[in-house]
Image (tube, rainbow, N blue to C red):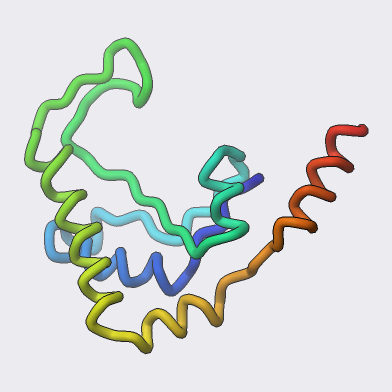
Amino acid sequence: MPFKPNKVLSEITHQNMLNFVDESQILADEESIAGGDIGDVSLFYPTTQFGYTGFKGVLHGADFEIIDENKAYLEPAKIVCGTVADLFTDKKLLREIQACHRFMDKEKYLAYLEKESSK
């Protein structure tokens, strides 16, 4: 399924990214038509995803190489930890995330998969 990020969760993550990069370096609100595991997960749970830097080459390519371990490993981990800390300290954010999440239950998901597999 296409990935549909939770807007509130994405904004919280965005704000945490600003601790490490300038706003001009962030591409926000990009729409994805790609499918993948994260797309299916986003049907059931509020989800966000972000890319970062610290490498060169093609992602998943033979020329992929880490060139800055701080940017490739530490800063993304700090962004995630900051986002989690925000969610623990501001319960209002959790309610906002839940309110804007478009939820698909298991039965609807399985029916969709069955319909698609019969095409």
